[in-house]
Length: 120
Image (cartoon, rainbow, N blue to C red; front, side, top):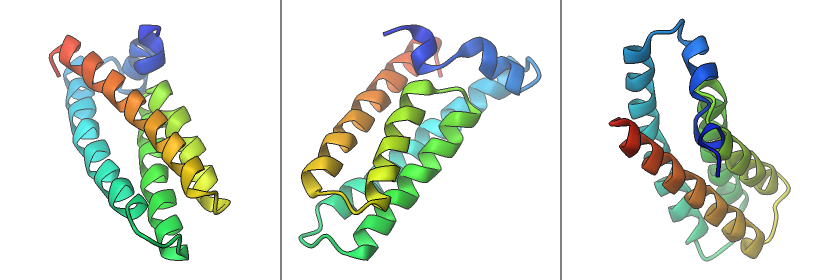
């Protein structure tokens, strides 16, 4: 895993006008937001029925992660959340959603590790 796959620091710095303090704040806030969205996805996927509401919750939470990760140049999270969002929109099987959720969790673990490494 390349560091730039987790956070492309140079591009993220460009997004915030080279304000490192602001970028660190955004990345910390983003970490909290992703954690909240993961809880929503997890709770929805634990539902017994594959209802339109369950698919909507998963797609919406994945969309939130995708958008923020795109703005902050967090490639792994963007890719994983995008795939999960698309599958939820297509009413994919629970097994498919769970596999893609696991990919999102791996991306989040990599992000946490990078944030810890950066002192965020």
